[in-house]
Length: 218
Image (cartoon, rainbow, N blue to C red; front, top):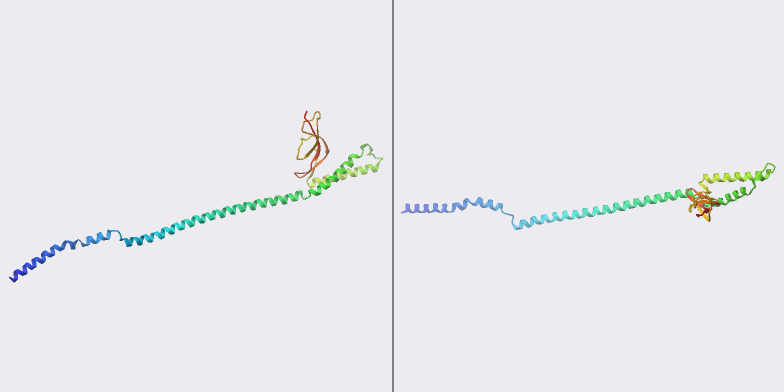
């Protein structure tokens, strides 16, 4: 009886072991499946927290880059405008200096024009028939006036002062002043027929316009 009891107990134990052997064999597969499953919610939240600061940092750097590029563009534009203004100021200053050199004697020349007019009238008022060798005083005076007038015109020319005696030239309102209009046969209308007083220019600027009579059209 004892031997039979031991046999039955051994059979029961083997049966029990066979019953629980299959689940134990599947344990490694369960572990692999668990390893392939997604992270748990806590781990996912930690990863999202790590990603958000990186994304925010990239966006912040991009915004700062755009802001700096805009500031550089603004500074560059201001620099270019300032450079252009400085160049314009330099050119204007240079032009003013050059004009001062050219036209600084304008007032002085205007005063001398009256002297030139007097010399011209004095030479024109001397009768040509009276200038003879038997009248040496008048002849010497006349020659002296002529020489003075010629020398003054040379000085004028040296400093850029040019006489305007536009007989037969086209009327120019910037250089001539019309005193009257008159029809003249054989003359083109709008031309200068008579000069009552010569004019002068200092380089390209009119010091005094010539007083003229202009031919009138029929």
